[in-house]
Length: 104
Image 1: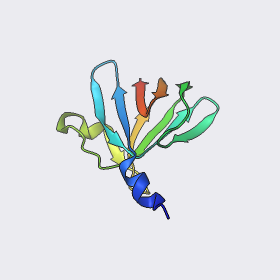
Image 2: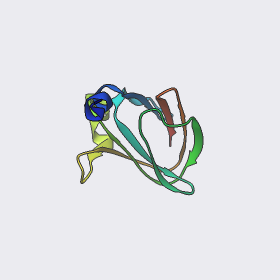
Image 3: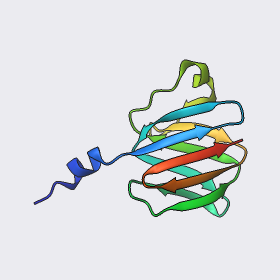
């Protein structure tokens, strides 16, 4: 029998969060939740390709997260241990387990 928990441990995504000033985060994650204009939605490994507008809210992501010291003050920890970044608006694209968030 296939151990799906072990399999999911090795299937990761790559997330980039880019603001007008800098790339705030670039690294491997296991899940990403964003404030879409039609409501919050989550992306896990092998999610269907998507492009969406984002509204005021929080980008939340999980994994073995290391934030550059320069940008640590922009992030917080959520109730479930996820890393959280508040945004005013933005755009997200996910394709082939790579997620790019253009955040304002």
